[in-house]
Structure formats: C-alpha cells, structure tokens
Amino acid sequence: ARERALPGNRMKCWFLLVSLCTCNVIAVTASEHCDDWGEDLTKRVQAYSGEPARIKCPLFQDFERYSYSMAHSAGLTLMWYWIGQGKNLEEPINIRHPEGRISKKNDTIWFRPALLNDTGNYTCMLRNTTYCRKVAVPLEVIEKDPNYCVSR
Image (tube, rainbow, N blue to C red; front, side, top):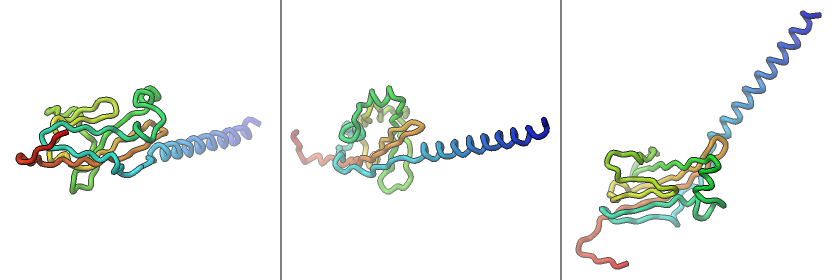
C-alpha cells in the first residue's frame, strides 16, 4: 500500500511544482508590462540654454488620484529616463552625475542649468512589482538671442 501512495504523492508534488512555475511566469509577465501613455505634448517644456529648467511628472498632475508622497508610501518608485534628440535609445537619467547639474526632488527633475544637449523626451515611470505606468514630456532647450529681450 505504501508503494501505491508514492506515485500519487509524486503526482501531487509535480502538479504543485508546475502550478507554482506557471503562476510565477504569469506574475513576471504582468509586472514587466507597463501602461505607456505616450508623449504628453500639453506639458512640453521650453528653456533657454544656461538657465534653470524643471519637468514635473504629469502622472501626479492630471491623471492620478494620489500625490507623490502617497505613491511613495504605497511602495511605488518614480524613475526618470530620457531619449536625446535624434537618438533611439532610452537611458536612465543619472541624478548622481558628478557635475550635479540634474537633480530630482519628489516628482520633479531640475536642470541647473539646462544645456542644448538636454533637448529630448523625458519619461517618468511609476512602478512596483505589480503596477507600472509611464508618460513622456518633451524638453526643448534653445539658445538665447542676446539681442532679444523677454519679460515675464
């Protein structure tokens, strides 16, 4: 009787192992999917070269029902990426760059100062293991004409 119980137990263990692997694959696939909201042209930022500029993540402005601090408390992480003008590869933004020109505070990245080669699309991504949403904001840095006066 003992020999007959082993194949049944092996079958149960095999079924459990296959079930766990299948669930794990489904969970990994779900966490790798990110809801991409594309490029938000309404939040487009223009800045003069050599002057400060900032980009706020639109996920906390219009779309989400919670603030950055609530999202952070819920275990969500905000990450920033960028694609430079004329490039195809999205790269993480180096907030800890030795020059210290680009910094992050809550849902905003700052350029002190913005430079011409900062022009591109900046993507903020809010994620954890089960949730991901991202949106891109274009930044255009332009050369200031010394003969042109702008008052604000």
